[in-house]
Image 1 (cartoon, rainbow, N blue to C red):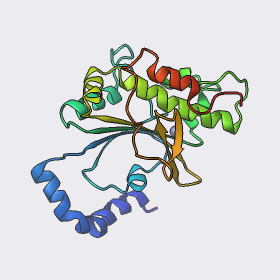
Image 2: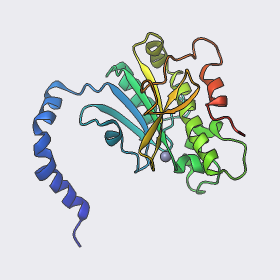
Image 3: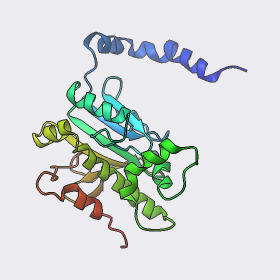
Image 4: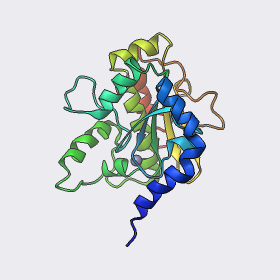
Length: 234
Ligand SMILES: [Zn+2]
């Protein structure tokens, strides 16, 4: 039986790579200089390059279940996502960090149910989204949508606990972007701090979260999570 994946690897080198050969040569000779750290859910339907119209060398990508950001203090143990954030900001000096959740997210759905008894790492990981959960026994599609969006804002808040992120964000050298991708509509909703909610990209004024307010008062984004433009119950 032919190995389809092996064939695809061969196809890449013979069919796709030649079109990008010089570009990759440049990226090797000059090194990578991506300007965006993209933290996205691992979901196979979320395709960052398609969404953003980017190509090789443009996105420094980290993906995990739920697009979560672990705490900076290392209390959660080994975390590739935390290491990637530090590397992207300190070494690559990215100017944008995107946190991208999405509709129909299995990670967010799992916050309302049980995980496999053997999935101890997954169970611990999901705790990073726990604060986004709304108090219902059985979540409706609307509740799940709100939870997905609240989880994105929660991760933005946790990003600001990384000293190198906070310092550069407050200095205006780094912007944070909270996105919620609606798979079935092909539309990204952008978290807008000024409006306190998610705005369809078609109506948003920019791709970022706007001026970050967390340093103005202790409430900051935390207040926005509670509101998040989609308050529970209305
Ligand atoms: Zn997901």
